[in-house]
Amino acid sequence: MNETPSRRPRRSVRALALLLASVAAMPLPAFAQGVIAPPSEGQSIAPQPPAAEGVNPNAAGVPAAPPAPGSAQPRMQGPASVADLAERLLGAVVNISTSQTVEKGDAADDEDDETDGEDTPAPSAPVPPLNAPDGSPLQKFFDDLLQGENSDGTRKVQSLGSGFVIDPSGIIVTNNHVIADADEISVNFADGKKLDAKILGIDSKTDIAVLKVEPEAPLPAVPFGDSEQVRIGDWVMAIGNPFGLGGSVTVGIVSARGRNINAGPYDNFIQTDAAINRGNSGGPLFDMYGRVVGINTAIISPTGGSIGIGFAIPSLLAQNVVAQLREFGETRRGWLGLRLQEVTDEIAESLGLPSAAGALVMGVVPQGPSDTGKIEIGDVIREFDGKRVATSRDLPRMVAETPVGKVVKLAILRKQSLDAPAVPVEVEVTLGRLEEAGDEAENQTDQGEEQSVEDGEEAAPGPMLGLTVGDLSDETRKRFDLPAEASGVVITEVEANSAAAEKGLEAGMTIREIGQEKVQTAEDARAKLAKAKSDGRKNALLLVADRSGDLRLVVVPID
Image (cartoon, rainbow, N blue to C red):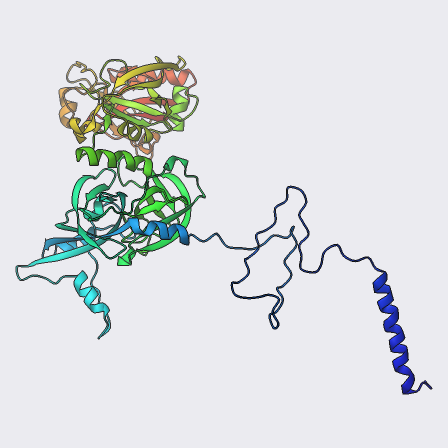
């Protein structure tokens, strides 16, 4: 309390000296501040951002960089830039514009017919009327895009799409629905050049078209990749012409594979969340090596814009079609001549199959490639040409991708009777050509054997499985408009809300087999069902035919 001010500085100096002495006695750190210690063996160092060019970090007035986090601390950073990849690919992606002269009112009809929110493979819808503000330079662009009505009552409609060059000589791939019914096709390149294109070939089943332009110099081109190697979660890049905005690049991942959106008989789409909009159709979907793994074809959207659900034709399917269109101007697909049905869990259990996989044979086309007596109705095809057949939807695509005339092996499971185990059978078939057989060949079935039944026989009394059945006669054939070659017993009535009704059975269908045994009369059918129930079976396996003769297996619970 009696200290004088002159003594305070001396005590402060003494305290500072003691503090410095204690610090000097402490061991020095192994590394200076801001330097990361080397990682332990096998541990990688997080990448450091490069120093800015032209800046001397040691210069006066330059603030020191903040300390880098320790090597064990996770670093937050976005995905790597795709700028270099996009720059390399942009020149091979083209914008495709088409014009079509339509009668007055047709354009509106086309717009009404288009599925709302889904860019399905169909003729391109016209661009809707567009108006820019007064004096805007965009109005000329809109006027060029939408030609007015001509004096003769016709109208010229233009539509936009995308494509990509696969050969420097001028071969371009796009969607068939981009150029369908077009009077003129123009291809616009990234460097501003514009060339007229002609069609080398189209395939409506896969929605693929191949065009040809005549360039003055070789064009930048991109290769196809292997879509089978693409995995869910892989990064992909879409480049195209959405809403006429050419050279647009979007990036996303593969969301799913093997999607069936009922666009065609060979649906096997890659699903992606890379933004795809109207005008992207026909454009490429690239992997991160710059290879085309898909052709952007469709979107699902309630708004008409991208919501992250887009679909691309896989390159493996596209390559085969493109090669045929280039060589022949048409497709030449393999054909087995079989009518198939899905193997459900119920059918697999009823047939005693190890799993619900494969394709169930429900018909053999007369004089078709498989009409050799080696394949029977009820056979389950598990392998085709050494490849596993997962579902009945996969087999037609696998056959179509196989060359015409090739001898292929089919691995089949066959049951001779309901109680016998399924046995493996191997059959060889020489593939025919689907196009020569005609589209209707895919729907032809084996008509079975005609059964002679006396006229006037009455239907069996009472329902069974919710069904009332009767013998085939001239009267029942006329009543249900059945062909003369129909065989088995006819379903005359189906109880509402019964198990049979839930399975889709209807009056006028015929039952050919019960438990893989043929039935010829209604009494025979009742006896077989009674035996199945007495044997303790929970379900009845029925082979039924609709009025056109198409066969399918139906599993109905036994009451």
